[in-house]
Length: 151
Image 1 (cartoon, rainbow, N blue to C red):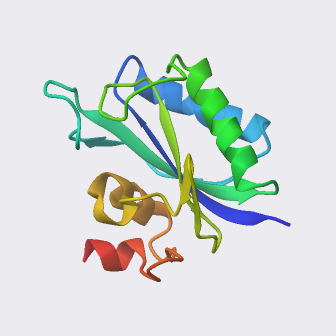
Image 2: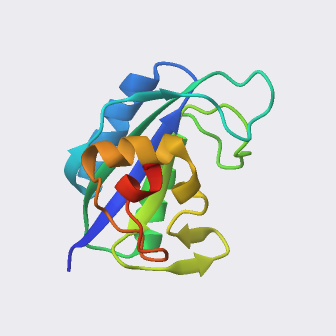
């Protein structure tokens, strides 16, 4: 069974646009069927250490046939291949971060995997790229869409 998934890519170290291109290709090689990809958005850091450079963010939607945990393993392996350490702080600069924003209608809270992604609905750097490719995607916990949340 295919599940419709929304991901967010973020990064602010190195050639981020090229890292995103490689990450999308790696997602496809790993079995993620890309439906749409937003343009890259330049965003200010949120909840990061002082002096953190601006981020690039992009949304990707597509279909996944395996479990959310399998997708997490794939995204984390792509992050590590891009140079992001396995142990890292979410408040520091990074080469690549791939977040699972939604996974179909799933609502999940496990120690290292929460879906929908926490705080996604309050963060413009998530909502603007997502709005550009999936404005009417519903967050399963609130029922709201990026269109509604940005208005």
